[in-house]
Image 1 (cartoon, rainbow, N blue to C red):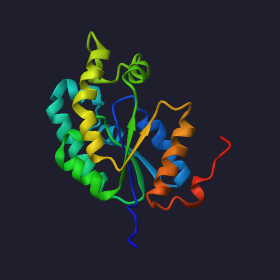
Image 2 (image 1 turned 60 degrees about the vertical axis):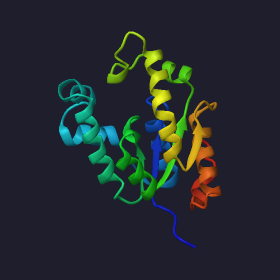
Image 3 (image 1 turned 90 degrees about the horizontal axis):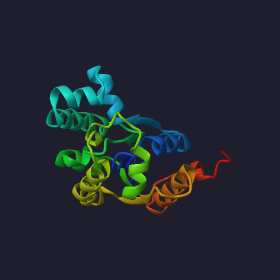
Length: 186
């Protein structure tokens, strides 16, 4: 029996819960949490918004692909990718080959609600954020589905139930969650 990949990579649209769920999942599995957007900001010394503003989306996407390439070579991480990380074919391949990819799927209404007051999302700085989210969903959902080993709805009652759902699906797929999958009282 082969050893399962030692990483979990979370993909999904902005507002789907990748960072929040990723932190909780990493804690439950005693793994290191990494947020790709924070890694880009750390490497550049600039915010994602500023990078978009100064360099444009294409340059940001190249930086993102470089970070994904580097991070997928690590072991023992839970990685929250940026919503557009799957646009790069090499990034999709790296994610798929070096870990278990979990697609956090949310409804457009949930995404609009979760991102409505967030001014740090350059793609939503538009007159009609709902239309933009709908457009992004149409473009990206097939890519999320292509790369994902597991898909989890994030419209559940709370974050802990989503984490437990992921842990259960990881166990079913043969990933050794062991005692970490026990329910916390938190």
